[in-house]
Image (cartoon, rainbow, N blue to C red; front, side):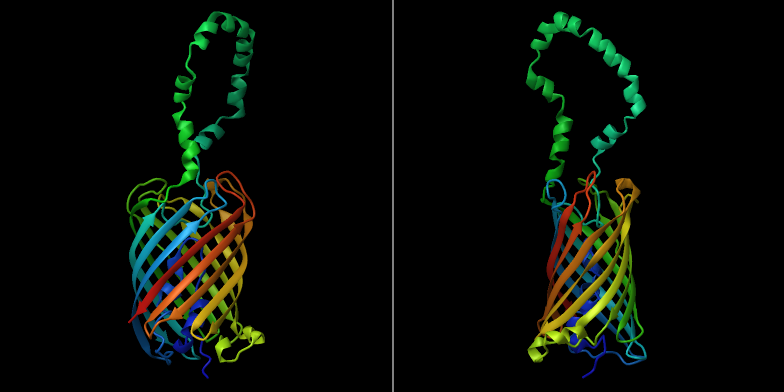
Length: 367
């Protein structure tokens, strides 16, 4: 049996092994955007051969930020139209360029880079008062204290005449801030997202890739700012085994070693107003296997996260993982689903310790 990493009869397992796992961009998985889910009948390319594969992916996905105040949620449906160009190399290697673009229907708010802090302008204004400013008012408070009895005598009736409701009516802004955590999930608009990746595999065990994930917000709405979000990434993956594990064909638990892989991924993100959101580095240990045609892949590891300076948060080490399943329907169609949990180890202003989840499911057609 051939043990080529990109051999399409084993495409379900190994395409998922090559998939970069991120909380904020479902499209960045080559298994979705690159068509590795589909085309089960195609063989791996020989050295010097070339192949192009148009792909269409439809995916519904949602994010659940349970560690934030109000537990905000956001949902989207993506329709991605892409193309994979692949060249065969010697030693069972390959080089591929994968690109896709399409609409993203948004409910709630647009997807964002991992760790985004919802900065509260009211808090910023409050924090902007310096100690000197408070000191300047110290004497005034003393003066007021000296005349406290006078004011009570002279204006007692006047204060008593104030209606409490009228007094609180002047604080509508505070009520607005209190509702900030609600984060409605109504339908908002249609954005545009894209994906571009170059992937080099010198042999059947090693893969190196760089990717760009642009996301265009079509109008100002809520916390979303019209403009282009950007995310850049690089990943190295090393398959420790041949990837040929199928429990329906007699493999046992000890054979899982053939599906083990290591990966190292680094990503950086920018908001549509140009704000640098931060970066993270994910070293992962993973395993993939088949049960007949059903492929299951899971991985986990620490996430070394560096937040952008806008957040005023410190560096921290979080936890991140992914569970992904895929099932082929015919030669050119694959159904897939994935779950990406992350755990934040520390909280802060606009951020909280706890779990976030991203889940999605969809279908990919390759031609």
